[in-house]
Length: 377
Image (cartoon, rainbow, N blue to C red):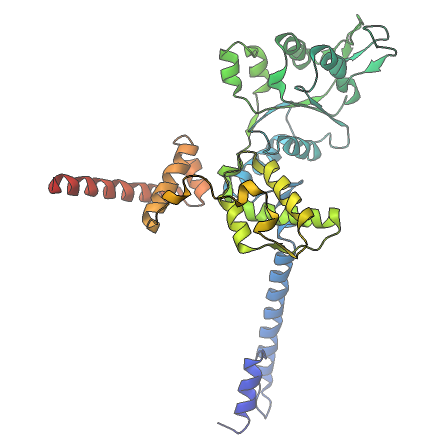
């Protein structure tokens, strides 16, 4: 080796891509420059992904990369162009209104108005006036004539949140709108034609509400022509780190802060929380922590006390093998998907064949364990 090999190797250790000995070999020089250019392109691409991962995985304000959310995004894109009525189902805090707005934004009527109404926030008389409008003097306090949301959004979309909270009388009036696309202002005999798309949302099981006599069956079938179910946060745990990053960046913009993220122990606590309030609860926790922290990273002390406190029963925890943990997780996902193996495989991020192989292996292990127990007995 030449006397220059020492400095050359030191240059490589310090980050140089390569070194060329004299006399210069033009073919090797070109090959080395092409290699360096490719490496730089790859580094720029990786850096861009690290700086804007949320943007790449954002669907009109909704963040997610888990299989169940990608399925929701894909179905929303499919129905957006042709829907008349859509029913959104899912627990409170899962983002039903965000999905409704996304569907409107990618629909052919995106340039028209979107009107939203929370049906659980108003009594019947006010809800009827809000939706259909009223004439002057129609009731006490009606000092002028006003149009309702259906007229206001004519040509666009009306979003009815918590539609299951409507009384049966209001449900009958809504059914008329869906069937005939016509309304009557409160206190007016005139029938007005409208052309609106309708998106309804509820956190209740409407089939159970129909059986209980609290929701009209004919209205249910009208609304349920296209149904999109939004998963709880417990069904999309893979999205939690991405959502945390999204909310931290959002809080940085709103509060003028420069928070880099969460410490590992703080993130671990959030990953272990069951999140009964779903994405809305997670956003509130991150937002509160961003407000109170004085550091660049959110730590345990910045989280709400109920999250920092060790949950009851954690003292009974015992270590399990990865095989047992894998088996328990697969069983839990299958139960969550009501035994639908195709959906369970998508949620787990594996192929259906891999899931069948895992279930067969678990079944064989269980059978062998039972035989050993009998033999011992």
